[in-house]
Length: 162
Image (cartoon, rainbow, N blue to C red; front, side):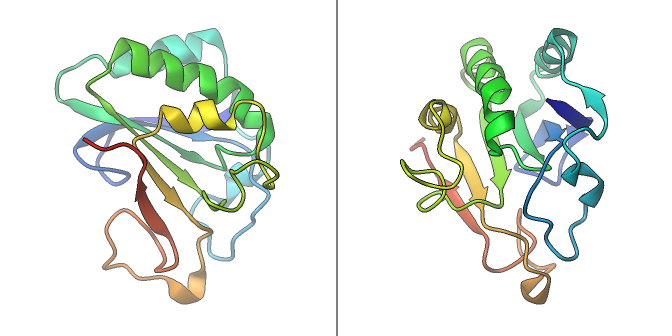
């Protein structure tokens, strides 16, 4: 797996101050995508054990509310295998920090058994995510007044009760 960027103090992709990982690889190719360079699965740098250690270190300060996973597309099957391990480690290391994830795939269509991106680790990956923003970015439905999403078709799904 490759990644395009790690934001150390992100305030745009979830509540509070967050650490965000932009993974590489996306098959959606949404018109008007803000991050189209990450469509390429080989874009950016290889994700390594050192990358994971850096993310864990960046999450340590008390002012960091949580972690956001976006891309590219975290739920591409090729990315899930590595990301489930990262999310598990974040959840175990920082149980009070929240985890957000952005995906163009639909939670109740593509991430269920038989769905387009369902793998042997999909359910485990979802079990670590507090909030999932799902649905492709649709340029014709772009609305800059929306909080934490780019187009009105996208949903903010609270997967865990507080």
